[in-house]
Picture: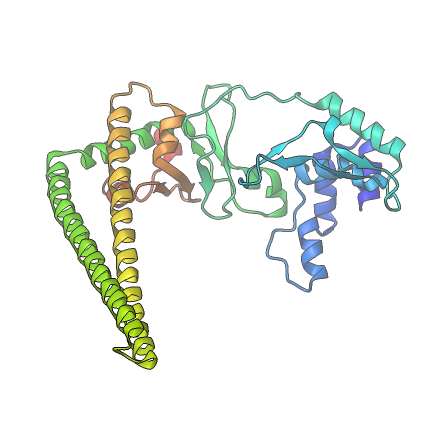
Length: 349
């Protein structure tokens, strides 16, 4: 299959054409091939992506060369990796039998480099990257304006694999969609900050302070008990040295005290975790309030602040919209404002 991909590319076929050819002839994609080798049934569509073909065409391992040192850790304390420049890579040739000649690989590399940057992004829409297809879970793409200036969203997987009966168009007018989504977001934010909600938050805040004070008192109380038990252990040790109690008595009582102290320490740990959770929740609520204030004061919201609120938006084939907020209070409120179905096509007309 690797040889076939290189042959077709050098014969003038594009990466998309090659991907379609492999999909049409039901050639297993790499992940399916690996699953089948392990005896696992495939759970994917089994359709080739243009990016997979391009990756194979760019992988020097098929020439018998092994490359290492493409990335390195920022430090031994961190899990983060950084990419290294190609001149710092470690290349070892003739490590295994080649599938592709070095000449053919270099020819392919020149063609790929000559086509880089041919596609440019002209528009950067507000909800771009957040839209998902409810049915296939792929991305919803936003197309360029048509001759009438209308902008439409469509399931990318359908656009790419529709000829293989994958998913459905999910077409909708993006301009109307964006206007309605901003309206929903503003209404949800306003509802969160209305007087009633502020009063409830204030009440909850007082209750939280009282609860936190209570927890701190309990922690102090357990610490005092630990000190008492520790003093008992010290006295017992002195009694053992003085011969007042036997070794067996000392060991028996010491073990009992140690178990008691261990129980108190566990209680303290649990209470401190509860305090930490409450603190994190308070910080999150404060951050949400600040974000809402910033958003409502914006004449033109930015992509960055939209992403602070929204995790993703799923579009159903019947135009139903599911919004997934990053904050639970907003997620609970959003159902009061968004309709079950929105016919974007009809409203656009």
